Image (cartoon, rainbow over all chains, first blue to last red; front, side, top):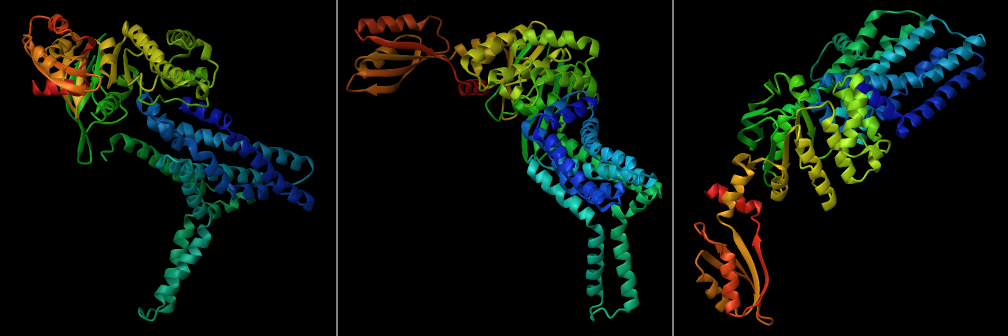
Amino acid sequence: MTAVYKRELASYFRSPVGYVALALYGFLSGFFFINQYSGGNVNVSNEIMSLASFFVIIVPVITMGLFAEDKKRGTEVLFYTSPVSLFDVVLGKFFAAITLIAILFVNVLVHMIITAASGGVVNIGTWGSVLVYFFLAMLFISIGIFASALTDTQIIAAIISFVVILCVQLLSTISSLASSAVASLLSASLFNLNPEKVNSVCDKVASAISWLDPFSKTNDFRYGVFSISPLVYCASMALVFLFLTYRILEKKRWSQK
Amino acid sequence: MIEINNLVKRYGDIKAVNGISFTVNDGEVLGFLGPNGAGKSTTMNIITGYLSSTSGYVKVNGHDILEEPEEAKKCIGYLPEIPPLYFDMTVLEYLNFICDLKKVPRAERKEQLASILSMVKIIDMADRLIGNLSKGYKQRVGIAQALVGNPDILILDEPTVGLDPNQIIEIRKLIRKLAENHTVIISSHILSEVQAVCDRVVIINKGKVAAIDSITDLSKKLSGSSKLSLSFKGPEKEVMNALRSIPGISNVVSIVANKDTSISQVEITISNDSKTDVRASVFYAMSKGNWPILEFRSMDPTLEEIFLSITSA
């Protein structure tokens, strides 16, 4: 696992990807920070959660090549024919991407120091936001890695992970859309249903979909209210996508098509 | 030792590999010969554990490649058709990465890499980016990668494809050197290449083993039906009749006939039971008729002809 981890992490900085990501993060975090700083009311949690909404751009960029490039170059043979487990390979790449995210986060740490020094808010809620930030990163990176294993074209991998992550970010919108769609369907005169029942069905549809939303689950962390279940949710979803990635790699070996 | 038993790989309705069995003995250089699409690469991919077989098994030094993959893979160094190189790394960085991947202990690493670099002659290139190397050097780095971890068995899939003649000779020299203390399997679709480096050949066609033979036995079998090509200046029909009357020649076929210059080329087939060397007789017959010989050579059998002679025999 460490072999793949070291290679992937170093390769981010052999290509422009690592530097572009650093520049983008420097600009975005700086923008969010200055925006608040000039307002006179600085809460780094706001900055962190704004950055988290940019995972939809940053994660596809840093994960798209992880497996797609190996497939295209033929270097994936190394993983299949070396005495390593494919799941270790998946984990190595996953942790390399997480580490890059952590390196990018150094920007925010600097802002936290500035905030604390100039009397702004750095409290338990801020650290809660940091925790949420990294658990969300784990979830989205595992989605990006999964997309990268699906294809041997980086751009397609990036588009797949962009769309999936966008859908996850828009889950609250999607849930209200879905419930109103169900409402208009059920309230058609054809079914002749009790409007109260229609409403309760719609509520259930909306709550089922929004249950999946990692953002609303973790919303209270920034106020210092911690709970374990949202973290377990993110970590286990990440594990599911990593496991699926592993199965996709194994499939190549066993495929008979 | 590698034991390959009744290997089948099915892709949909097509059997890319259809019941291949053979063993590779320790210290042997085995040539794996077949036309494109015969199933060479698929078989090699199965032996190295890259693909699984539909049925049948591969045992490497007694370890089944699917049951005990880690043990089996430690014994094998593999150079696929396209060398698995990261173009953004230097040669040394790349080989260190392979050391990590193959779990070479840190203490042995420096010494091992030094000996590999000198063996494949890429010491001067150690700090160059792989993407900037020539194709021949990339192939060497690919072989170096296979040597990491000191495997007993080397599997090289078409190691000289796409190289220029000088590089081909260099790589063949290297393979011969490696053969001194490794078991080597080389695939190729070029007969002369296999003849140059191998002890024994497995010829496969359409996913099946067509022949397993030592090089000397194979060339004996092939020389039984050898052919000569002759270009001369003179009347074609007369010459062909004269040649046909020589004992030991079973057939003479015209290939090129140019009436203006009266230069012709014929193909002479020597009969299987001929004990005498017909080449001298051909020379005297031509000299007697005063027909100058312009070119006279034995024709190397092509792979297709080998298949024909092997499958028809």
